[in-house]
Length: 284
Image (cartoon, rainbow, N blue to C red; front, side, top):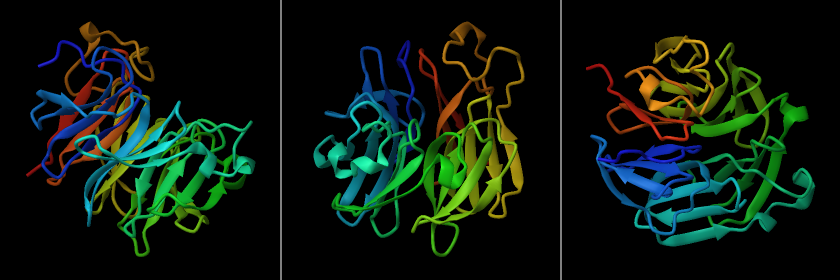
């Protein structure tokens, strides 16, 4: 229902009701937009910022909430789906010694089954910051030197394992990695990924949205199950400027956010100044 979504450099998440939430950094409806499962614009989330580079929706005992890391603002927010701020964690919560030049550029976060928060400083130090569900600081771990990452762009909690672990998209390292929740490097989950920008898990599957024009599904062992939307046309990938006239249904330009709904359908948000979201339905 929209002629253009707006400038997107963010993420996508799906609520338990099946509505699709998209972070949009520019345009007349910047912020977090909400769409029906069929793609009709419904509303914007009040008070949601336009710089949620990475965010998730989680249903907890107290309700369903948006958890987002602000790229420019450096703070971490917990909002109701209606836009009420329940938690605002200031950047001063993270000790200065874990920041590069005294500043963070937070790119993604996720929530562990126990409610703890894990936030990654993916455009600066590559460190992951661990916070309690009430926002109190617990610890920081990792980094470019410690884990050998080259841009730990986004993370998700990988609940396919016991105990759960972090699945990270090492974008410029062209790999996916596993890290324990207490901060220890477990190993490489997948190699030769086309600059992975986002990860998500559903059932026994993980997906990587690759900014060079592809999405890859993996099984628990890290083996490829399927590859979607692979765009091999020179100049059409890893850019946010591909004009709509060159878009082809089912082919990506620059995947930047990925999310599953309850049925396992996949939503992919792109890095694009125009705004573009793909939906792939799970095979029945």
